[in-house]
Every structure is written in C-alpha cells, then in structure tokens.
Image (cartoon, rainbow, N blue to C red; front, side, top):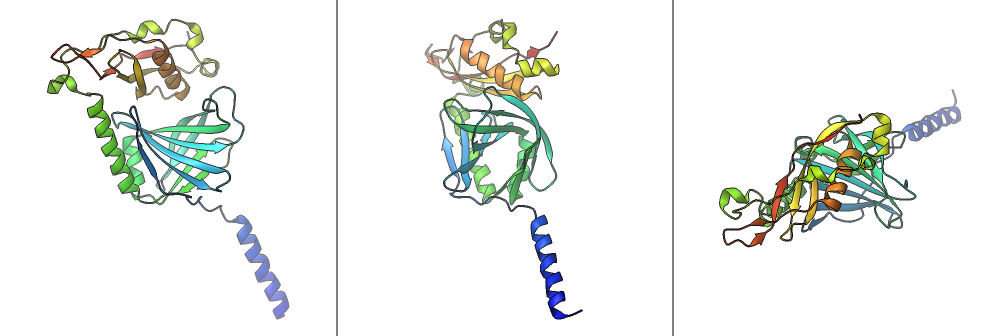
Length: 271
C-alpha cells in the first residue's frame, strides 16, 4: 500500500472518529452566583454562548432535604407546564427523576426543573460534570467546578434561612404560639387537578413546608414530601400560596413573628 493511500485511510478514520465523538460538556461563561434570598437559596451560572446563554441553577429546599436542579434555555416554550421523564447523572450513573418543563412568567425561556434528594445531590461534591437527560431531547451536559465550596455555601444559606423563618422556634422559645390554618380546605375545585396528571391517572400524597410571614401570608412553599409527580407537587404550591391564609405565629410577648408550617398530607386522587 502506498503512502498516499495509507494517509487517505488514516485521514478517513480520523474523520469518522471525530464525527462519532460525543459533544463536549458546556463550559461556563461566569463564576457561580450564590443568592441569599428571603424565601430561597439559589446558585446559578451561565454556560455556552454569550448571545444565547444557558443557565444552570441549584436550589435546595428550605430545610435542605431536597434539591432542585434547573436549566433555563432560550426559545419557545409550552403554554402550560408539561411533565417529562428524565435523569440526573454526576458521573456515577443516572438518577431517575420526573421533571417539569414550563415557561417562567413573562419570559421567552424554557425551564426544566428536576428534583433529587440531598443524598443524591451529595454526589456532586466530587463531580466534574453533570449530565441532565430529558426524554426526546439531546442531553444537557455542563462542566462543574468548586462544588464542595458551592454546596457548603448553600448549606450556610439554608442555615440562615431556617433562623430567619424561626424554623423549630417552638423548641428554643422564639415562638410561643404556632401559626394556625387548614390548607386542606383550599383544595375545593376539581379544576385544581392538572389535566396532564388526570389524563395519565397519576396520583399521590404530598406534604409541603410553608414560610408564613407576620401577616399570616404564605410567602414561600416548598415540597417536603413529593408525590413523585412534579406537576401535582407544583400545583399544590400554587393553590396553597394563592388561597391559604394563616393566623400568624406569636412570640412570648404576643407579637406576630415569621414561622414555618408543615402541612398535613395533601392527597391527589383521580377518582
């Protein structure tokens, strides 16, 4: 075989190998931003192209028991939320997770919202990448860095959030009288059941952690016990925040104070 033929074959093999190679994980455009909000802790970072960045965000629940992983992508999104099958992989194998795909209010973006346990999230401490799979779509894969520091920062934010909302305040004396209200009464309409979950026959029991302010308003709602059906969990928070009203908690002097409320189980049944 002549050198020209040999070089041609070698070049062809290189081209085939390159075309079959998996896409590289997206590189970050900026450092992580850690936002200490009044009702949530969230870390986010942009990736890809500066003109059309993709945002990866990590948001722990107020008690740190679960984590949401969110991906925000430019482009048209569905008019109503849809539920999809997916997975989260930190390099140790996929963690199966249903996810919610929807359009945030007044934006032209797609938001994909995964939920995993704090135990599963702990895999991220040693991870160099995260791969997010959504059914019928190409995977999202992102480079990760400084994850031990980031998760430690989120842990600190959650600790501050617990103090701010007087979580466990009955134990240390900050709360003398608990907030009062019955969230089960606010689920009064059959229209509250998401059509997609009804069509699929999806059911489950959910429990919510509520942040109740000094006026008795639900300022924040997070899933404490998920049904395993994200669209039911999300609708539960929507209904509670829009309709529930509490008599606020009181301190030893009878002054209204911020507090947290764990709801009784909310049961979603199709029949």
